[in-house]
Length: 275
Image 1: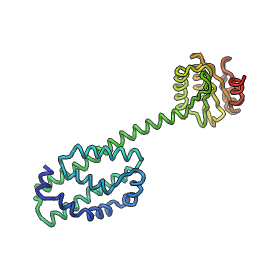
Image 2 (image 1 turned 135 degrees about the horizontal axis):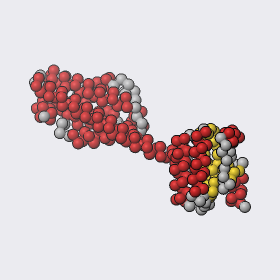
Image 3 (image 1 turned 180 degrees about the vertical axis):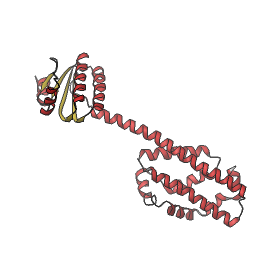
Image 4 (image 1 turned 90 degrees about the vertical axis):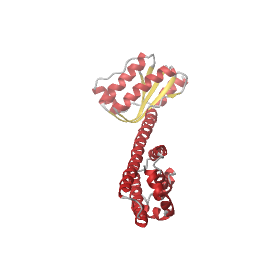
């Protein structure tokens, strides 16, 4: 066992006695990361030097697999949360590997106490521990990063289709920017869901902020309007731009009698809130 080998040769005590030299050698090995240590500490509250000693301790104490796994998870989540560069992490851990083996060699040069058989066993188990840490780190980084992206995407989707209640039965849906087929699919799902949830009677869809609208999007938008009508909600369209109107005319698109249009959102609000 790794622990038996290290207890026999007092390697832990040797590394502790050479802690400062270990850090200096490690920084020389991690050429790119050493310039980023303070930035990583500031951005993610991650102390790379202290964590290097912690990782080395877990590796040396071969019976602390669960602590090593938990530490790898903690690191993976932290690096994913703050979007820290993965190449820095890989370089840092590989620098720790090289530094650890450098000091194992120095230790053996001084004491000549590690047999060939013990050395090969030591090499296998230490490198396996480091590889295990890296594997767990990347698994947890990837898992948590995917969860973050999914969560952020849901936030973006919600913001991209902001349905704003202005009375208990009237809502405004201002659409801004480009509207592609992906966004219209989100639009359809959220509009129909919110009509049912909020019992919306009138949905004012303001298109004055639309910068571009593809042909497929116009067709999809008409389906959304038709769907709102099926749910008993009337749609009011405001702010149609001339180029969008021309596209709709060329496609032969016509609004149903239940869909009203106004030149501006203000005109619609005057009609539904004041009159």
